[in-house]
Length: 241
Image (cartoon, rainbow, N blue to C red; front, side, top):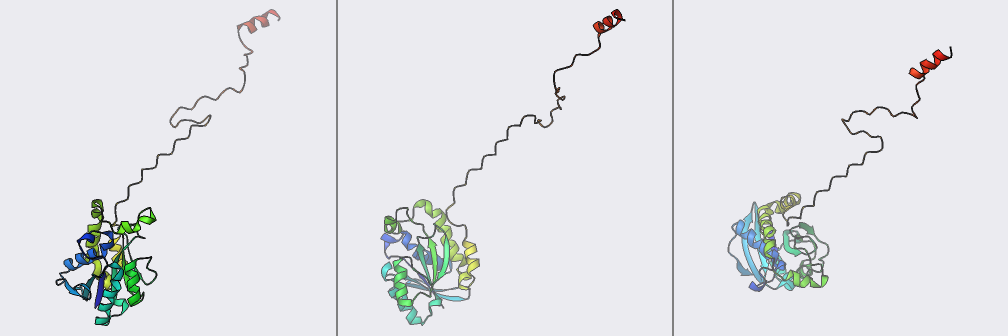
């Protein structure tokens, strides 16, 4: 059995926030794979189903982000799961929008939901990091993650959520590389770089020929010599004979 956890904050006020991309991913996944209805359980909402050969419990904690571990820990203890059977889907400001990475262990980069789960499970669970980017001003990070995705961002967000749902079976099978390959390139389109200007043609050096031009006659090496022959020369010869 696999426990798939999506992180977010409950209530309509937060539904479209970048911080709730984990909830969005689980909603899309449960819909795509025909999971059962969402039911209140483990201080959250749960839905059961199958992805390929894998039995899956999807969990969206309703404890608010900072207490996510309380809900996740309760489900893990009830089903006697190992951390390796847990996959947490969450927003990641250290990744560009639409970029996806899978990680086991390591730090939580200040993410309060992960921090609380670490306190209940340790750090050996898997994480599906869904990039939402970060603001240029570090002081605006909280406002950034608690703000809704812009309309323009839906152009890459919806295809990304679809791809996560469609290819989750590969990740549960342990084929992380194929899963990530299937999701590559789904972020926002980058502006194309303008084409490089052609290199200017070097001016011909002195004496260089333009291709196809006739070859000029060789230049004289000095002043033209007067011919020693001619009518005057013949007349003088006759005079002094």
